[in-house]
Image 1 (cartoon, rainbow, N blue to C red):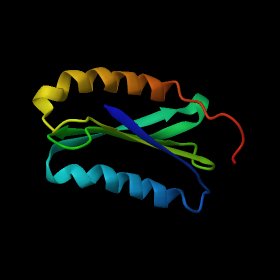
Image 2: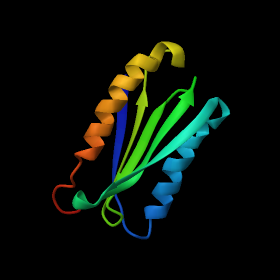
Image 3: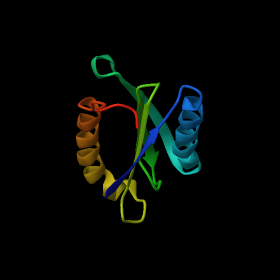
Image 4: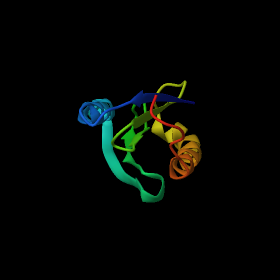
Length: 115
């Protein structure tokens, strides 16, 4: 499995563009998904907010998320397995790595000034 990540330096003016794009990428899987669960990410102490998408079914990416501080930083991640989508076979591995990524997200902190 590979977690693909993208960091973008943002402004308040283009924040919604990146939020909408991230949502569009997650919901591209709705054709084959049995459901898409959205979980709010809110870590006020670190100014980290976002959404986590758990995409159920035989889809290319079962786990995606974005986090932002809403003013300077935006990070998006998507998990892909190097295998044909088959949730029955991938579920044990998916559950294992998803728990790690959720822990990573909960411990996330923005470091340094905006570049």
